[in-house]
Amino acid sequence: MNNAQLTLSELKNGTHGRIIKIGGGQQAVKRLSALGIVPGKEIVKVSGLPLHGPVIVDVDRTQVALGFGLAKKVFVEVLDENSAGR
Image (cartoon, rainbow, N blue to C red; front, side, top):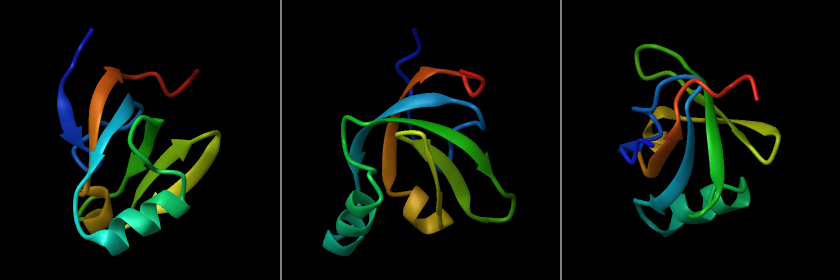
């Protein structure tokens, strides 16, 4: 088991993790919460585009696109790499 902690923007595509905390201000926390991205929730990074492009994640079987800056505020504990096909 790998307990690495990374930001969502640093996570490899296809990696399964659990959100451990949200950094940033109240607006970022509110915006992410509205998208279902809250501490304790399991998440899969679907893709991330190069050059600080958007990051696409799967939360509760719904794909959500986040801006790179917002994705850097989401800290994730790695549960399983390369689990996108589940």
